[in-house]
Amino acid sequence: MNLTKDSIWSLLRKVTIPASVGSLFQTFYNLVDTWFAGRISAEAIGAIAKSFPIYFVIIAVGVGIGAATNASIGNLIGEKKINKASTFIAQSVIFAVVMSIIVTLFGLNTSNFLLGVMGSDATSIALTREYLDIIFYGTFIVMIQISLNGALNAQGDTKSYRNVLIFSFFLNIFLNPLFIWGYSIIPAFGIGGLAIATVIAQSIGTLYLIYKVNSCKLKKYLYIKCFIPKPDMLRELLFQALPIMFSMLFIGVGIFNILYFIGQFGDLATAGYGAGLRVEQVFLLPVIGLNTAVLSIGGQNFGAKQFARIKELYFKALLFGSSFMVAAGIILFFGAEFFVSQFTNNSEAIMSGAIYLKVAALIGPIYPIFFITTAVFQALKKPIYSLYLSILRLTAIPFLSLWYVINIREGGYQDIFYTIMTTNWLMGAAVLIYMPFFLRKKLKMSFKKLFVF
Image 1 (cartoon, helix red, strand yellow):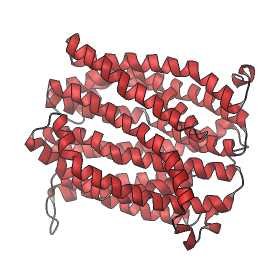
Image 2 (cartoon, helix red, strand yellow; image 1 turned 90 degrees about the vertical axis):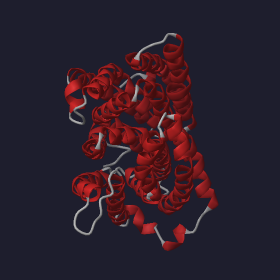
Image 3 (cartoon, rainbow, N blue to C red; image 1 turned 30 degrees about the horizontal axis):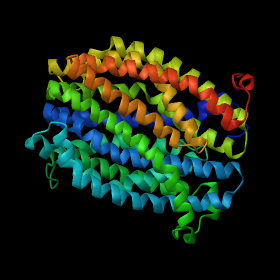
C-alpha cells in the first residue's frame, strides 16, 4: 500500500478491515472474560465492570503511546526521513517502559479508593483487586506491545496486530478455565485466573510483534544504539502522547461517572450495564478500525503535504462510519434482551442491560464523528484538541447533566442513558459545525475546496 497515493476508498478498506477484525477479536476476548466471570458469579461480572474505569488507565496511556508513535513515524515516512523514523521505534519502546512503571504504581496504590467511590464494599473491593492487581503487574507487556503496533500501523500494517488478537482470543478460551478452576498442578485462582490468562496471551503477542518490527522496512536503520534514550525524541513523544492519554483518561472518567450514578440503583444494574457495554463494543468495531485507518493514512499524507487527501479522507470516513452505525443500531435495538441474556440469567440484570443497549442504538450514528475527528487531530499533530473534546463530551457536560437529572429531577435508571444520548448528539452537531473551520485553517483550503469529495 502507498498511503499517499492510492485511492482513499481502497485504503480505508485495506487498513480498516484488518484493524476492525483485530478489534472484533479483542472484543470477543472481553466477552469471553465476561462470560467466564458470569460462570463464577453475578458479583464477579459486577467486579469486572467496576474494574474497567481503573483498568482504563492502562488503555488510555497505551492508546497515547500508540497514537503518538503512529503519528510521529507516519509523518517522518511521509517526509522521507526513514532513518529518524527507525530511531523513533526504539525511543517509543523506552517511553513505553517508563510509562508502564508509572501506571503500575498508580493502579496498585489507588484501586481501593476508586472502588470505594464507586460504592463497592470491602468484599467487592477484595474480589475486584484479585483481578486488577495481576493486570497492573503486567502493564509493561501491554505498553511495549502497543508501542510496536503503533510503529507497524504507521506503515499501514494493521494485519500483524489483527493476527495477535485472533490468536489471543483462542488462547484465552483455553487459558481462562485452566486458571479459574485449576487443573492438575495448576491451582484455582478464581477471578484472578482471568488476569493471569490475559498476561500470558499478551506476552506471546508481544514476542510476535517484535518479530514483525524486526522484519519491516524500517529495520534497515534500527540499531542497538537507537535504544539509547534521546531526550528530544522522548520529549516529542511525550508532548504528542499526553493530550491523547488524557483524552482517553476522560473516557475512563466518563465511564466512572456513569457507574457512579448507576451504582445508586444496585449491583445488578451495574452488572447489566457492564454486559451491555461489552455488546455495544462489538458494534463499534468498524468505527474503531476507521480511527486507526484515518490516523495512519492522515499521518503520512500530512507529512507529505497532501492536504486535499486529508480532507477527502475525513468526509469519506464519516460517511462510511455513520452509515454503518445506523444499520448496526437497528440490530442492537431489537436484539438487546437476547444479547445481554448471553452473559447472565438474572432477569433484573438483563432488563438493566437491555435498557442501556436500546438507548445506545440511538446514540450510535453520532459516535463516528468523535472517533474520526479525534484521529484527524492526532494525524495533524494537534492532539490537544482531542483533549478539549473529551473534557466537554465525556466529563463536564455529562456529569452536570446527570447530576441535575438524577438528584434534582429525581430521574430513574433509564434517564441516565437518555441524558447521555442528548449530550452526545448536541456535541456531535457542534463538532460538525466546527471542523470545516479547523480544516480550512490547518490545511489552508477554501470552503469551496473543502466539501468536494
